[in-house]
Image 1 (tube, rainbow, N blue to C red):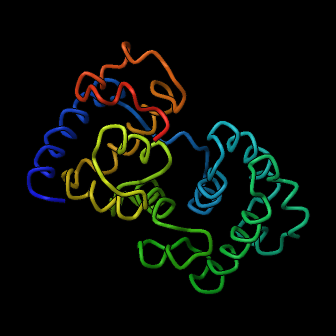
Image 2 (tube, helix red, strand yellow):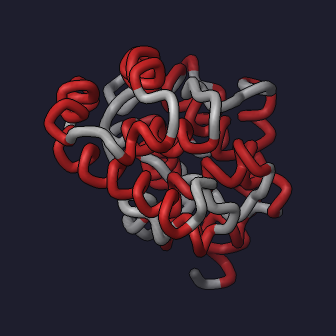
Length: 220
């Protein structure tokens, strides 16, 4: 990122962040969970699935599998049926149950507290790790980059990259660390409740005033 573009993007993201704070002052994660492990499960299930659907699934799932040990002993075929409506259920079953076994064997039954250790878990990339660290342990290690964030970044020209890790790196340079966690939550709410990927009335979107080109970008 050359210095001129970096400066422009830094000014733009500050304006966007101020507007997001006004729109969503209390934006928080909407996944339902009771334990660190349940959050790991919920975030993995949320890949290509809405939080609303995940919460519907986990309402029954967390009653059936009440402990980490229950996941360790779970039968894959049965578990697949329990999470089928989340999509990609076979792969999610494989990674969630494998992660449960690793948490038990390698981490003595406790969800890791560092980015490096969380990334060792099957199915856990930086998105999941960032959410768990922030929500459970109060540790901000990066910016959560999901589909809402990727769309937001490209609509408002905040990065040239498509790779989530590279996008996160750009955002970490553009934003002060104290804003990383809250910015992620607000962008997710913005994409979920105000600016969907489909065409919508951008004249009612206050963020578009900050960057007029965003009015014509929906699926990016």
